[in-house]
Length: 286
Ligand SMILES: O=c1[nH]c(=O)c2[nH]c(=O)[nH]c2[nH]1
Image (tube, rainbow, N blue to C red; front, side, top):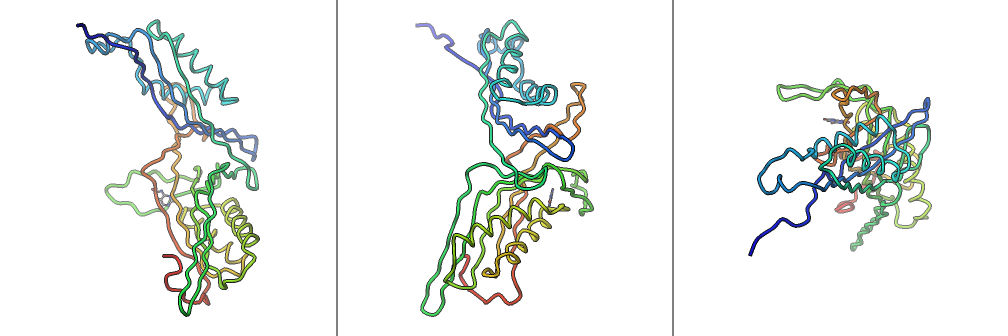
């Protein structure tokens, strides 16, 4: 009985590319998850370890970023065809290219550079009732928002392990988890929720951010200002880092247009904002 190599393919899965296109102050964003799989005459790589036919998956990832810069991203079908044809045409050993793309939809909040991701958000409620106290905490989780400009981060503490470069223009993105405590257990809950959500979005969009911590405070403040029925807001904001891709090795500049959307590790910024007359409510958020 002989043992033979069966079907195989390889490639870079889940390259998270975000492409920002600027038309003056109005930005458009394309946010994709691109998976490439190539196949063809790859027997030697498997049987003898000869990599002559293997176009590295790292190269495939770079190609996604370089094409995003060079060609822009229109319909994902076109972007997929562009990439797949490129790979098949690039080397005789590559007979077939499979390119799978997922596109995350975003809609505008307000202004030209603030977006909220379609779908996914969840409304939450947590109530406590005891012998002599009741409390209602409303909230939202997985409300994903992004500012494609209007965010800086500099002046931070440095030590011998600090490599982060200060920036005066970065993408700021987070998946908001917010919970707000009501002063009373009677309320127009739906209207209150819609108003609080709107306040969170507007504060995120309208704050020129010097840090996510500063944005957090402004978001909490806005809910308390807009919704007097609330007295305390707790926010948990993962910093969804977007790293500018270095395209210089491919002879291209990158003027804040092509980003890698990293998923982990991420900064996690958490804080409470409250009114100074907020009644004590033990257990409200636990
Ligand atoms: O808004 C930010 N806050 C931080 O505390 C921090 N730390 C970091 O590396 N980047 C950022 N960004």
